[in-house]
Image (cartoon, rainbow, N blue to C red):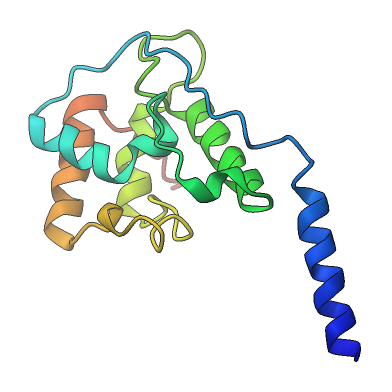
Length: 148
């Protein structure tokens, strides 16, 4: 009986959170600029592994319309675009392309939570190296200052 009550309660909570509007506005802003990619291969790998969170050309999958997944998806895309957005290249303020290669090299990007639902974004070692090299060639790379 307790399990049934928990299940019913869970269903009620899931139904209720659908009324929270955050994460369902899937209108992509216009593309206002684009970087000069060093090669078509870099652009292709970027499109596979990075574009959904780091451009205004996000493909919103069906599950991104249902809370609580919609909340996490919107949060990730909003943050990704605020830090590095290739669809607004040349904008004033932050556009941290010089950090992109380091994030991929360290395995921080694409986010681990993104990969199960987007297996095409999983890069093998050779593809990862090609993307890192291409990102460095396209955006440069911020050198970290080592303490001596």
